[in-house]
Amino acid sequence: MVKLNWAQNKNEISNEAGVQLSGNMGPNLAGGLSPKELLEGAVALCLSITLQKVLERDSVEADLNEVEIDVVASKAEGVENHFAKFEVQVTFPSTFETAYKAKLLKIIERGCTISNTLVSDVAVEIVER
Image (cartoon, rainbow, N blue to C red):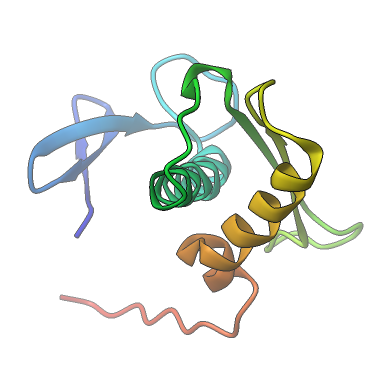
């Protein structure tokens, strides 16, 4: 579970381990991430975790410091209240062969719960506690 509290004039987002980060109203602001950035980060993190599990399963040693995952969410023209597209660019370690990289892209796309949720019909139920 994730919890958001308003504290010290900022949105504090925490899990059961305690406050992890602060939220901001807009992108690229110091002191916290915007909702868009949090969503982009969730996609990137899920893909990274999936990649790590696949590499472990395949017994592939890799320098994960070379891995980079960039995610940009964008809205369709004229649409205000939802993102229409998430563009994801993955940089793999330089030692990976082209065929293995192509295989990994397919596997991490299929294995990421967050991106799979975003492309499915999902219900969000908002209730008063």
